[in-house]
Length: 420
Ligand code: AMP
Ligand code: MG
Image (cartoon, rainbow, N blue to C red; front, side, top):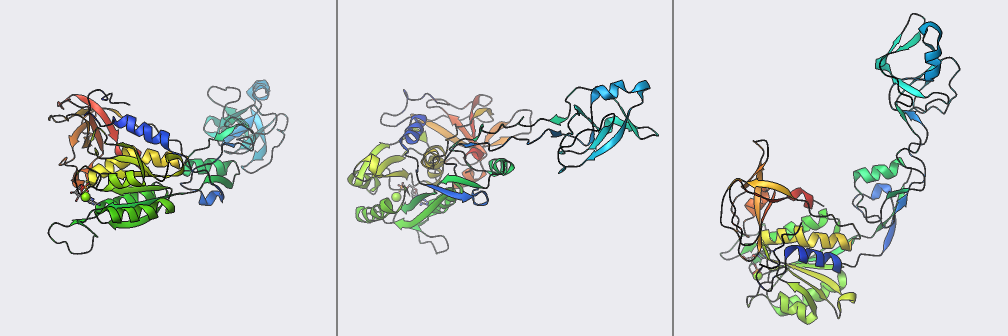
């Protein structure tokens, strides 16, 4: 979903979707593989495509509690005499042979006896005084029988390399009897905040000081994204401190992430230090908030170096930069298949002047009181205002030079797509 704003963005800024693609393309996935038990595998990324080691289901079995029979036997019973119950097949029983001239009482999941070609649910069966069954409703050959291999055939692909192992995929593997998996090793990310004004929550604030919320936020986001975090704390606004911190980070981690100090003010030392220690792929994205996002590397050349993402200092800019740009890069580094961005059209419930020179991601809540949802502003839209971001359901994407008109439709990006 491209906002196609490349032609009208401020010169020097990269289109948001181009920046996202450049990040994904630049990622070199982790290639170390670990063998772990299925129990330990939640949140890990499959390192190989797995094929089914057996048929699923393993045998023809019943989809209902009812009666298994040969339809022709039932229809041939003289004078509509029905069929006697000559067998009982609970779940866990082996595959039996249907006794001639009779039917089997059968339960969900139990193997359909050989010779039976239909299972009739118990709700559609009556028993006469002799204990013979009589059937109601339409009788279709093969009904209520789950066929061997109808879901997966032995040897066919089960899960692709790059699959994120969540509850359903782990259950799928368990259902096929698999209990060890080859996964990528976890990604190690060095995290640091820059800014002389930053202090740690829990200490008293002097005038001019600011609590470091970005590191609190990114620690959570990185953990949710299944990364091991090397938290390097707050780094002072000086080239020397940054050099020191980056030197450590680039050898100790797979990826470096920092926030703040990446605009173009004279107190912003991150860009020049990156350029001295490595280089920049790009700096500046045509988005609001999130413009001062930088992507570069620490080391002699991109291929053998440590990638670095420098997020803006403003907390909401940092959050949006993570969600739209950093997260897909992290997923690509993890060897995980990167999901396409999800958006759908939603009407705005307000009017306001639109962004100039870049697209804007308005923090909105959805009002579901009517038939279709309507987006309302979640609160103040300053890039320093976490209160609105904390309430928002999603972002309404406004293209550059486009004013927002109440009742008009815009692309809405649900925030829950960025969870892990
Ligand atoms: P900067 O990008 O360093 O110019 O910072 C932009 C704004 O974000 C300033 O108001 C900073 O005080 C604020 N800021 C920078 N880093 C953080 C952080 N880690 N937590 C909260 N606010 C921050
Ligand atoms: Mg700063």
